[in-house]
Amino acid sequence: MKIASIRVRFLVSFTAIFIISLILLVFGVLVSMVAIAGDVTSASQFYTHYFAQKPLSAQEENLYLDLKYMAKKQPLLLEQQQVWMNLEKKRLASLKMGLVVRKENRVLYQSPSLKDKQLAQALPPYEPANLKVRDTLEINGQYYSFVKFDYDCPDQAEGSLYLLKKVNPFTELVRKSLPLFLIVLLILFVGSNGYIYYLVSRSVIRPLLRLEQAANRIKEGELDFHVRPVSHDEIGKVACAFEEMRSKLKDSVEQQGQIEQSRKEMISSISHDLKTPITSIIGYVEGIRDGVANTPDKINQYLMTISAKARYMDHLIDELALFSKLDLKQAPFTFKKIHLQAYLRDYLEERTVDLAKAGFHVRHEWPGTPIWVWADPEKLARVLENVLDNSVKYGDKEEKRLAVIVSGGDDKATIQIEDNGAGIDFPSISRVFERFYRAEPSRSSRTGGSGLGLAIAKQIVEGHGGRIWATSEKGQGTSIFFTLSVAGEQREKSVDH
Ligand SMILES: Nc1ncnc2c1ncn2[C@@H]1O[C@H](COP(=O)(O)OP(=O)(O)OP(=O)(O)O)[C@@H](O)[C@H]1O
Ligand SMILES: [Mg+2]
Image (tube, rainbow, N blue to C red; front, top):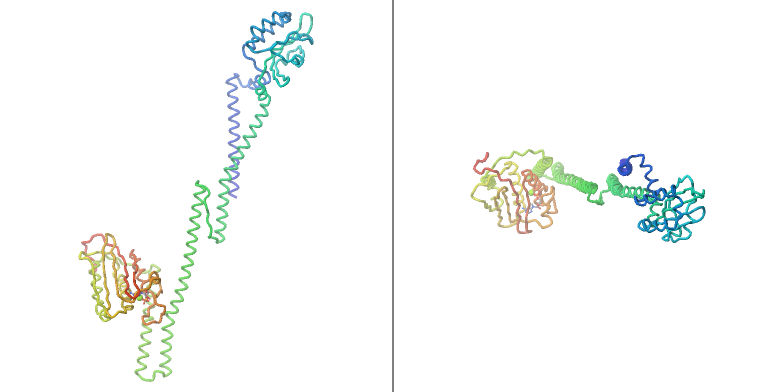
């Protein structure tokens, strides 16, 4: 509907431009005529004067007037050889004109310059009123413009004199076909206007129609195509914007699909992870009830297993709850300015006993000058716990080593936790921060775990505006790196430390 209206608007504006230019042209011609001819009414006579009555130059007009005067006052002079010779020599030759004098049907004189013998016969007959005195005639392809005067001889005979001038056939042709020429010009004008209208409207309307088609395809849910701009103008820009919109929409639809997929996977993982311990709890409870555990020692052993499984479930549910809170951005961060080295030292001290129990030799490496960072101490502890727990869980060497290395930049501090454990193979390394991802295929292995530890660590580090990544060599060990923002004023003491 709108497109049709643009087409109509184009048509209207083109027609308006055409009409206005036509009016201006006519007005301009009229004004010029007034300037040349003196007034508007004489403009109508312009054509008759300049085209119908062939104009004469001032000298030619003089000669014509003299001849007219002679014909009226002394018509006999026009019958004298001497007069003809004189006229020929003194005036006609210089004006390149010819004279014909006719009495009744007899040609008295025909200038030698007018060679054509048929000319005298072709000249118009006597006409006493002298109404049509100027005209053009054509003989054997030669055009002559002439003025004539009809007079009465003293012997009552009808006399006619003609002053003739050869005209260029081309000029005459133009003169004759001027109205036709003007019509052709008008048709060309209209035609070229129409063609320009067609070109302009095509350059605007076609791309618009193409955009409409693209919009319809998008509406139908088809996103696998390209909207290519055909020009660099405004419409081209619209097409570019359209293409950008299509590709963003496609990305977002794909992203949505991925989210949907990962949600499905998450539900399946959660049900699997909860189902396994529940099944074994049920098995052990039934074992006690059915008397399979028939000694107090056995019952105690069963109860210990049930308790461990239940605690594992409790931990799992806690992790899930925390992860989902972080995912929904519902776990508020309380940022404080902390002295990074002091914080890490305190944390490692707290864990000295259990790390030593696990057989770890811990070392740290950090600059002497204090690094102050912005962090939520509790959540940062959770990151360290999840990373260190992994080092403990996946440590498989006789001599277990753990290193905490800190390096400070202008605006970021990087913390590296390095172990010499089992390591992660290459394709898995990029996925260990995904929720529920576990590099080992068996979920019910000795190490247990839900695959949420590093996903939680990632959420927390990103909540701090930092980045977390891992490097590893299978069988050699793993390094987890993460960054924290350095706090501006270094002198100020941390709230906690
Ligand atoms: N230090 C490490 N050494 C070897 N493998 C590691 C290490 N840290 C992580 N991984 C691998 O990355 C996977 C994901 O770790 P993540 O901590 O997220 O899950 P998890 O330890 O399996 O379970 P959870 O921490 O939730 O109990 C682990 O299953 C493990 O295969
Ligand atoms: Mg873990």
